[in-house]
Length: 86
Image 1 (cartoon, rainbow, N blue to C red):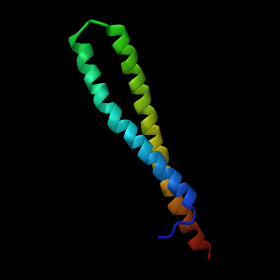
Image 2: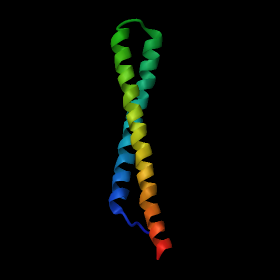
Image 3: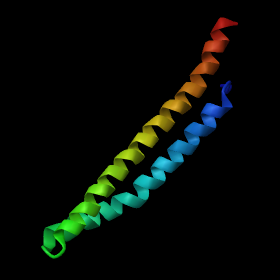
């Protein structure tokens, strides 16, 4: 298996790592805030605002992971297309 487009490969790896880091570090915070909002009524609006922002951030992280995987697949598929034409 030969890489024809190294740039796509490295961008895909970078986005994949960035997205995974966002997911790894935000998911425990979301779980913690789920417990806090279910147990307390103190400062509920502030916690709810932070909780919603974390949900948006984890969605962006998932988008980065998906785009990274797609770019990795494209970087490998271009190599296959060039082999078929030759």
